[in-house]
Image (cartoon, rainbow, N blue to C red; front, side, top):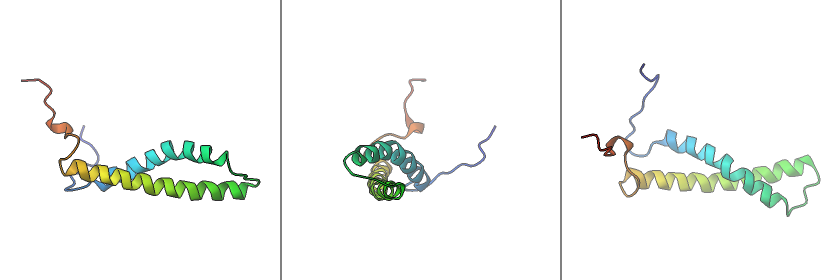
Length: 91
């Protein structure tokens, strides 16, 4: 069965960058927001939401920049390897 959709991007795969940024922002952001909220008085739900949005936005920007930098480095050949070119010893 063939995939519904395939992509062979030249340069940075922005779809991968966006998906990875989304997942890492949740995985990294939730503990960061929780840890930082322990030191701040947040008496109302509005204050809690505002705090989560402000801290989450900073986490999102930092994660997005890091993921994009990683994708550019891998695309340039400076890190990682292409999974299609891995020698699996099947000669």
